[in-house]
Length: 200
Image (cartoon, rainbow, N blue to C red):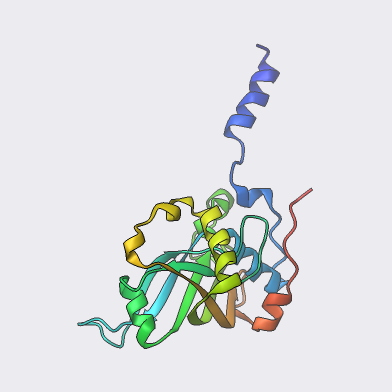
């Protein structure tokens, strides 16, 4: 085997494999598009609720949840979740449905490959403010497709847990993707942002 062929094979085996790197991140000036990009690329979120559990009643309580805004390549911008009322954060939501979600490109390989620390503004992340609402009918069917295509393990989760589909109803979007401080995006701007296209 020639040395040039070896180099080609080595590049194919060890070259960039992250799906995030096969996509062009929108320019940081296009804040709403950046927010939509992050929401679609991230498969999980940290959700903060107001705790109803002693000894931290009334305090912020953060927990991890799988999330999807649509099957890969089909971004709606709406974060969907598969929840059970047995879960402690969901019990918080039954008392107060208001919450916030945080998603970061540190959850992908992008920031590591670029050499960005998760706390760096260049490692873009979003914080969504709003509330969690159960969905039914056609929207629940879409949520099922959105979640099960990206989290196939969910299909086999215990049926006796009374799972249900929910969405995060966004009231405000906060974006930190560059130097100069956090930027805000209205829900209208967020949902109107164009889907992100693959790099040529």
